[in-house]
Length: 540
Image 1: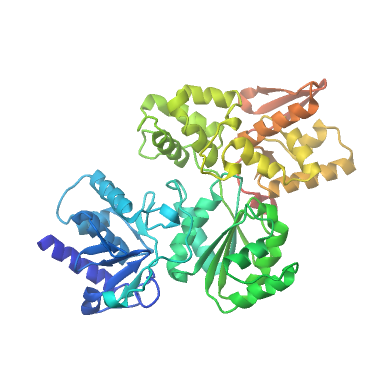
Image 2: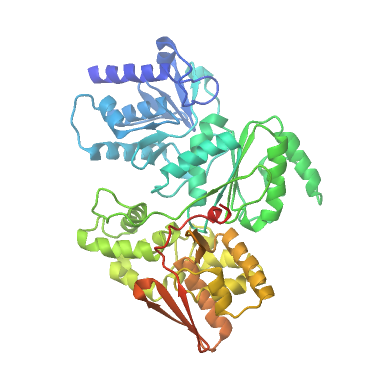
């Protein structure tokens, strides 16, 4: 009993330093509660209510059975909702003066998440921040007694669940959260399948305490052609038929005095419609914050663009203490799909090579890792070498464009102009990086044709289909393996029997000799000349 009283006292102390008013908990330390108030409080989050001093947890009217340690962990996390609590702090509070294995904490976290149905129906409560600790992300309210509890505990606005742990994205989530609060309008831009939606959902979850229980509105746009009508429906605003401007007026009037976080997910196919809508909301609803995801920037007033990079995959292998995020993701997905739970030193080079060939693209890594149990590491490497990964089927529950790599690139390709489509297919003949001058030289273009090519290439960079880096003297461009393979297949079908380019790598990958219709052009294109970067470098 002594340890329980100690834990309760420590939790009460934490609550004294946590502002819990009628709104949700914030990570600030400005407010204070007396011991008496903290002891008598009933905490409400999602469909749950909890009393720390009486040590019970209920879902609606049903009391749940939690182990003593799991309850203590929840008490600590909920007392610091919105803040990261390190594993060391949890050990010091929950297991004071006792030496326990790290696995004990993971076991109780799993049990806690199971009891809370964490991730079901889009409700998230406890998330892991890799390398830093755990965070309680749901909004929390305080009721002075059971009689003050609301009749319904379910929040109206739910965020979609994140189906997997986010590896290598802790800094991105933290930075994105800060930008949304300080700049109000942020777009997350990157290649398809890089994890824009997952990172944005995680950031919105972190921000939820700042906007209230019903203060986050998530709008998935991939299945709509009219984002104005979709937002009106989400906000329960009667639209004005056949009049987009009047509907926007109604939306802006509704939002004008609201404090809200709007998350617009998958904007690229409705970008011409969502950009002016977002700009109006930014200008006319000063307490509304906007977070958008897209494969290209909206180019709207007030927008701040944050490019989401590919996962790092160049650090030491799977048995190292410093495992690259891409490798962590591969191992986790392989184990979840029935593969081996761990891999030995001998497997490290194969895993690293697979992640390197896939350029650290999360969706591609997830998809091939899920087939390790079937094909083995060598079999996966052969599938990549034979360009057979495009048609591998992913999770049936995913969006249609995420169910295969072919569908992933197809979605972006179909949004391109005819000039951009033709250029992208031609660029698949480059085995490595290349310059604009190399493209012009290869295809013998006149000045007017060269200007047209430069415009199309700029569009491909904007749409995240071509990666760009810069050295001291030139810009270099590159296609990701998935994109290059897809476009090479399309080019082959288009030419239907014409002589195909033959690509040969010389000098350890530093020079690519491209033979096409009898013409030989040598292009200096070392992938080691500079670090790959976001399209923002083009303007720097």
